[in-house]
Amino acid sequence: MPVNLGFAHASNDFLIAALLIYSVAVIAFAGDYAFGRPRRAAAKSAKPAEVAQLATVGAAAGAGAAAELSGPATPLPGSAGAVPGRPAGGFRSVWREGPWVRAAVACTAVGALAHLTAVVTRGLAVHRAPWGNMYEFITALTCVAAIFFGYIVVRYRAWALGVFVMGAVVLALGLAETLIYTPAGPLVPALQSYWLSIHVTAMTLATGIFFVAAVLGVMYLVAERYRKRVESGKAKPGNGLIERIPSPQTLDKLTYRTVVFGFPVWTFGVIAGAIWADQAWGRYWGWDPVETWAFITWVIYAAYLHARATAGWRGARAHYIQLLGFASLITNMLVVQVFITGMHSYAGVS
Figure 1 (cartoon, rainbow, N blue to C red):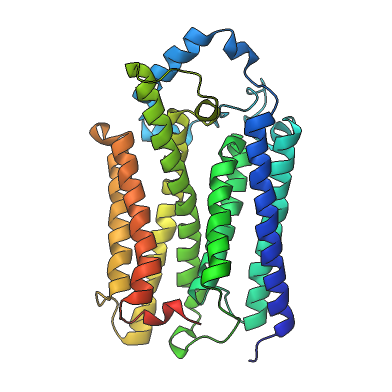
Figure 2: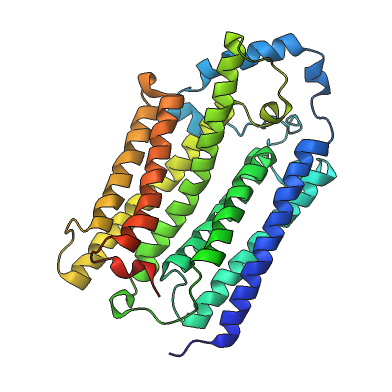
């Protein structure tokens, strides 16, 4: 079927609008860091206790995995304290914060709606799932990342993470729009299968979730390094920017929960890809470069989950494994699929 140019132009317009609104959201999140109302008046009067907590929080960063997954939501530093008798998260808890937070969260929500509309209209324009090439894949996974971060904001009061997560979304989306934009068009014959909607959808969802986990992992390493420097006397407490982000313990828990959520989705995507390969090429697995790197990525994330649940490999070392997994995923997506010849060589083109 021919491309519906009306929907194609609408998709482009909505995507540009989403990029601009996300940029405003990042500015608002940054404004909260710079000009947001003080939320730690009580903590400032008990600075020694705060420093003691900062010095010892790393020891608690690897609390039992089962307890973390079943424990209650924890309000993040920079947010108002939990209200007795109410859950830690929720829209009302976000809206009780200052105007910068309200503006940032509202822009993130409106931007995500525009982004989702752009993805849907792209699919309507090409009469298929809108992730048939690298440009569509990146625009879809950044949409998943933005929506998933919105859930974290509401569930865990995580607006302190917004400038970093949404900043990364803006960067990825901007690069997609400027460097690898691909006009709406038909798929190559090898991709014209209903398995596109199953396999690639799962990989898109998992990649968007792992995208958020990678940003959280980098933030954990920064916060943990600062904690150790304060503990050793190499740095003085009171770094306003670093102390506004969540504690290493909280970042560790959020990263772990995020990877736990995304790993089964990635696993399903790899299995669905093998089934599609059998239907398309007559074999479930042929060690094609993309297949091999997808398996390597799966192994690394599995190693992270194992390391994270093992007493000797918690903290920074486990996060390095998680970031190695995301580096493997990005290598597969931007290098292997585009520059290495294989059965998936068409993945970087329309």
